[in-house]
Length: 317
Ligand SMILES: Cc1cc2nc3c(=O)[nH]c(=O)nc-3n(C[C@H](O)[C@H](O)[C@H](O)COP(=O)(O)O)c2cc1C
Image (cartoon, rainbow, N blue to C red; front, side, top):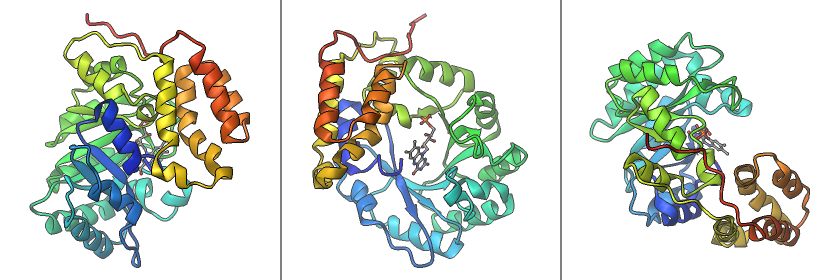
């Protein structure tokens, strides 16, 4: 996730129990683009012992091929193409989710990338469509035709952004249609949801985005649930310690003092809602102006409570 799943965040998540694979933030690819050094560090300095896929976003075929070849010189699990980003400033340039309007172009891009990466895994991250799902099956056919190695599928359209129900039924359709494994993505907010979605879709795994920011324990919890083990509750005092870790990364410490609260709020936007679903913590934290004020609030909410991080109930039955 852009600005979030950088090297430092990956290291922190790894300490709480890594996912099986990481995906980098996207490398923006243009005719004059060079590999972004900060994103590259999440590959070259990654000591999590988990494979990392390098994600690219762009539409110029020669530049995508050039960038993929450059990335292959590093220790990556494979190249992932972003066909899902819903930000209007992105899709208006016909990249990310914007490309889902042009199945022929997707066909050409994947064909050329497959040729260039014949011996390396090539994966795709996408949504179920742009405005509707008219192109869904033709893009799935393209994925089969070019022997894509893995599809991560967010079960919403680009225009839906993060609103509305996730169409897990379409993820199940993709699982049936495709020759490659599918990761189900969208609103995997707990181990209980992961288990439900895996059984509903038949997907090979789940991809977790926002709820890994809110609850970095989630990957271990999913593993425990898959093995039928009881999931240990996470006391809020541990969440407070997690917030301190986010505050103390070299990247956070380099942030000018006046911008530190904003930097931390980027993560707290997700954490606060899992701590307090009614939104009081979120509202109060958004009103804080300085990092000191923000941390005082975190102490008040998280250290004076015997509660645990909210988890959707998980039943072994
Ligand atoms: C802040 C933020 C940044 C994101 N950046 C990326 C990205 O660079 N590449 C990508 O494939 N998806 C990106 N996403 C989308 C997520 O990978 C995921 O598809 C989406 O959040 C839905 O899954 P979730 O409900 O588990 O969060 C981003 C999402 C958020 C919230």
